[in-house]
Image (tube, rainbow, N blue to C red):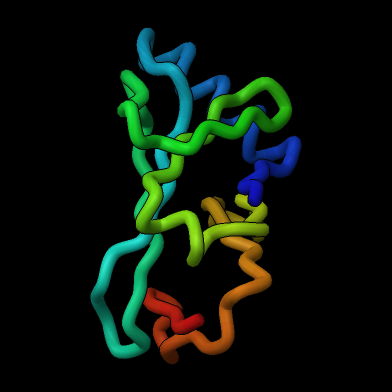
Length: 107
């Protein structure tokens, strides 16, 4: 089981953590919501919880709670820029469908 970051995502996260002045990495998870059932959640982590699964990708620690891991296993988080827009993109091989607005997904 693994969750990884692209080099672009890792660079962006490292820069943000340095600017923020604290944090050990990134916490990824899922929550129930939206028309397709699940939505990604992403936040900077200041500490690891005992139950967290920890992965290191391009030097960045990624924390995932045990309930979210079955939905995120194999996912790569990328950071993309398209014109004036930039943001994180989840490349999740378990994703079967997305809602029209792209806010939620189904596995």
